[in-house]
Length: 446
Image (tube, rainbow, N blue to C red; front, top):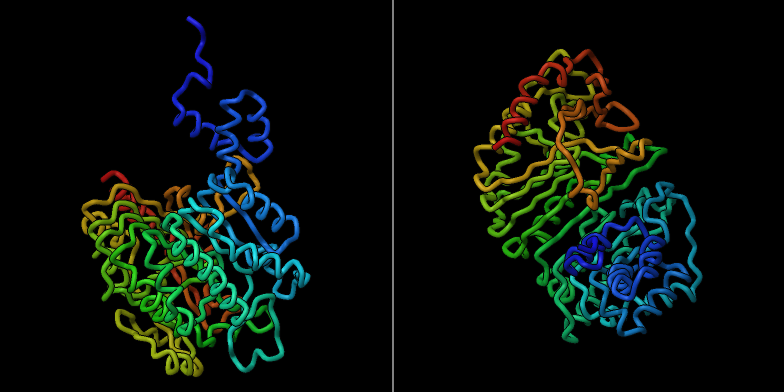
């Protein structure tokens, strides 16, 4: 009996194997093996179409879009509004020639040339700036107005391809979506049309960060106003249709304050997969909206934390209108400029609540992924890596908020579980390690 070769396998199996190729060069090599494998490799090579405001990227996009047989293979489009969306330097210059910019906009507008797309990723620059008057002297690559213009361009292109009879867009992903309310855009016809097509929405938010004045970052008004806008404008209108939802912050804790993320009035009757990144719990009922999603089959919690100590400046307490329900006043840590509190929730009780409150849950991930230098263990944190995460009890699962600490008001635990605070605080990691580990094991076994 002749030995089984790759080409003897079912086409679906071959396609799955080829999809695991490590990169473009491997796929090009596979094309040389045989006519059949060439066809499979070509499908994989052109499954994703990529464009950014760079001359060669625009040229390649246009070449594929102009070849009907190749354009039909694309199932996912990736649009980066700047050349490098990972650049953390807010003053980095990524100047685009006017001719390239015009070509980029024209190419994106012709999204209908890819008739079979069902997924789109839009990536913005990593650094952003709010609309505050005190920012008039500052600058970033993409101010709010430029980001809105990009959104209009892309949403109009999606709507145009839908109106032309192309496939419906099922999945939309945003990388570095600024936490800036934009009601003039979210009230538009193109926004409603595109969002109404979706059954998957994945958002990784980014907020203003000023390395020269980080003590004022948390006074930004969008931190108070965006959570409500996100719920009412982005989530509520499409909640009934969503099967998958991801809400990540790029590098900052979010959820309890300065703006409270309130989803208790929104129902997700079809939601099966929910992923949260950097979501931080500081109230007893903060996971109730998750527990209400009885259809949930998979829950991913990455870099999610419980805030055990909270010190907020008195003036911020007044402006933020922060609720102190479930908090205990720490009089010994109180100072003239701030008020200090403790919050006594443990992860063990949260794991137990998830185990009993979500009857259809089949998969759970809880981890603090980080980039490592060991190539066999690259665990990056991003909304795009949500499907590859594991579960572990990590020291950073307990955190504190201190308005008087820089460069971040959210100092995280070190590898031993110690957290910097104005005074000595317990090691929450070691104090709750045994009970948290047991509760996590029970949740994963159920």
